[in-house]
Length: 171
Image 1 (cartoon, rainbow, N blue to C red):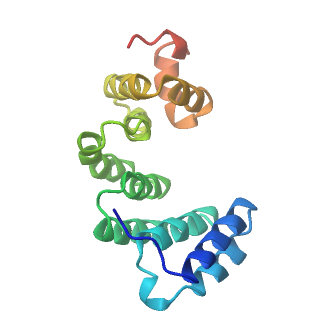
Image 2: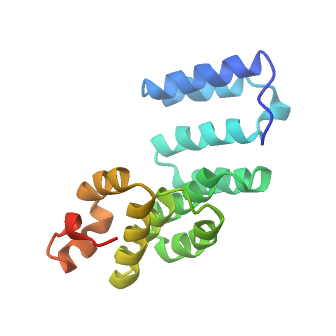
């Protein structure tokens, strides 16, 4: 477990989070810059910085930030998910899949990992694998998986191959 930030850095982190929730990535980034420089590599700071750059769709920076987070805290499933998501956004879907596969075994309780693997497989035309990963996501959290999957364009190849039968998946 990563120790929390000391005061007043914790306040800047919370403020940055608030700005990001309000959709203001510029202000969020300014708050992050107020954090003590030696703590810029703290996993909580890196995670929020990833969201700032993702909002700006700066996917190259997102890959770098996620990799830094993985080095600092490999036990954080979001770091694995974020790196692969950014790679996918960079049209490096095969690489995204390859990098996320180890996380499926390491974090069996996190539905977004098999869900994202299903998306990447669907985009790569590996529809049987996509279906298998999506079913694993459903087993972990059926409501979240199905809710996310209904409108996700990355899963369209899977739904097209099944005649759009999302709710008919057998678990």
